[in-house]
Amino acid sequence: MSDKDDTQPQPDLKPLLDHARSLFIFHATQRLHSIRYYFAIYAVFVAGYIAVLREQELGPAQPLVLTAIASLGTFISCTYRALDRRNAVLVAVD
Image 1: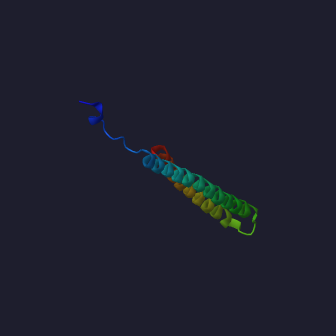
Image 2: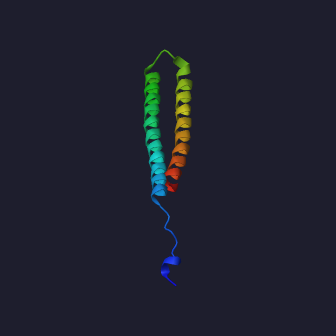
Image 3: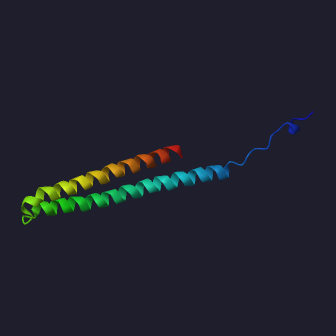
């Protein structure tokens, strides 16, 4: 009996590795894009907050407007953190 009869054909792993690599690249790129958008949105909120601080015509409504901007910024930051955590898990899984 020869050893050639007992050998199993080797699976071609190249398509599987290419697929895994493409998923990793996709999720890593998604993570980079999301942080870029976050910084852009953060800059808008900071600019708005500073503009309201410099505005004297708002009077007693100024603290309310500042609180609203800060609260919305906090919500956006928490939402981004949850999305980034999800993307980090997807990158780690890939």
